[in-house]
Length: 240
Length: 240
Image (cartoon, rainbow over all chains, first blue to last red; front, side, top):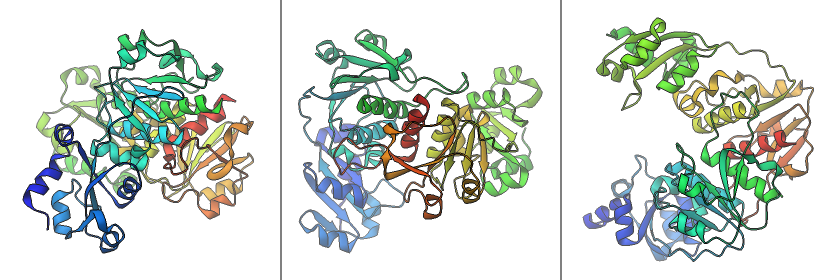
């Protein structure tokens, strides 16, 4: 059984305010919980209605009824496993490789996809402006899957960080130079902007090289989504 | 005022069965409706609660109250404009350029993103297996924005089409050859598979060249999402 106070606590973790207050976040789903259990991230507690899962993960898991799981889940059809983990302390960024920096990316799905892309392309550090959506938002976690445990995500003042950067700063702009012509260095920073407004003026001033993905279709085509553009640009950086 | 039968009709278009029966689809939002009005797609009727929009698009638009709009909208917060358009008759594919072929892509967001990518990369033809999600599904339309009017989307038997193809057939596989090494020709077919199962065995047998996007991070990284992978591969094809 899950006591009332515990239900309230877990449900509160849907909100950033309470995640920060408790230093914890909640995830749902067998696969992602298993990946987090196998990672460096510290587990707080896991509830599961799946007898097999509980048997496999005895130390940290409590068996609960599906009714109880429904009470702590944020989903209409709960995922059999709900896990609460400690928010890891971000490590100081060591800029020996590429860093992705996000200037106010607001959509949870986009941030989730970008974290997954960092994981795929071996980008260990993701720098987010304070107004970027919280990476422990349940919708972000849904989109990242286990990648969240393999990417060091730091929320910091982008302007301050870029100002002190010792590596070239690339930014994605509609009117930048064609990315294909770039010989990308072994280390650098790739800045991606907000969904509606792109990179802000203050950050633009700190970009050393504006790049773009050329458009091959009708000039009326919708611009690429920020996560799609990040995929293409990370591929361009890594393929060189 | 919108009469009851009309409300029922428009709401029925949320379902594929009724879209096919009536040969019509419904979209919401000022931007996408404007783009469709400017396209070759034939408008059936538009309802709007926005006086300005109605003034600008007199011939096809009826002014309705917000209460009425709420009745025909599928959204909790309607978008001021709901438009009903005729499903265009797909044009026979002319394989002089690249074609993207989807083998059972099921997620509406993925299909929407892929349509938008085709538009960006100048791919005029998108071939979908019959089990691929319907491109006039409201969630697909939400993700494509106006791109739906600029890409010729054909649902057909992939196996039959690929069997008769006169151009090379590339398929995305985890164990394919690194896409960077390919000198892609001016015309070909890029096959992308289902979210969970990838490309089916029957279609795999018809692929002339298996390609992949190399992984640079931890070997445990989540595989790339199908729309993200399509973005990277279309960029690879077009950049050559």
